Image (tube, one colour):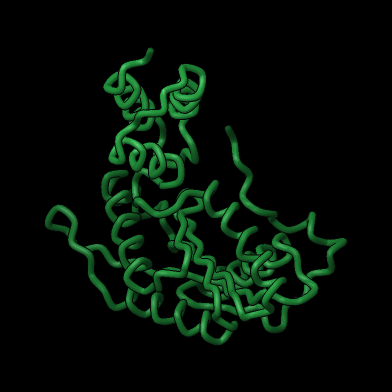
Amino acid sequence: MVKRTKLVDLVQDGYNSKPETAALPKDLIEALKLVKSYGYTTLSSQEHELLTNQAIRDPLTSLFNVRYFNEEFERRFGEYKRNENHASLVMLDIDHFKRINTDYGHPGGNYILKMFAGILIDASRIVDTVARLGGEEFAMILPGSDVQGAYTLAERIRTTIENTTFRYEKKDIKFTVSAGVSEFRKDDNPEMIYARADLALYLSKTNGRNMVSQDSSIHIPEKDLEKRLELPILVN
């Protein structure tokens, strides 16, 4: 029988030893296998919450990770197809993030990622899904929001960042974000929604950054989808 303290220690050690961009640490997977193989089913509620959060959360920002985003995106799309309510996807990317890492070091960059994540959470509703896809790229799934509502939210986030000065180790940091917005459509699949949001984000980047673009005029034929980014690839 694996002792409870040993299991939790294994999970915690494995989780902390991995890069902060990892979707699901391999040591955590091994720990979950141990739970099953040894019939260990008496986890406390706190330990169960620890395991669950570490499986679906980005360890640096505490936002949902890319694995959870993929699953929730598929679920929300299925919900949209059944109910045909509005839903939108917002993708956001911190402008010139490498420059922040160069000027303030990786701890400074991590600080900015955490601050940005906090602003996204403050701007979101309880029904929204806010995730870090990796690096400086983030996404928000907005059930019940049409493209104009999603654009308004993204623009509010953009202006908040633009007008905020962040203080790190007695140094002021200013940065901006770019965003792309895509609304779910009847003839969509998740890859098409993601591709349009990605292209809208790309337009924001190439048109000067620090702006929000929406997909109202963007149509990507399904045969051309492979030329665009698909859903984030998970590496186990």
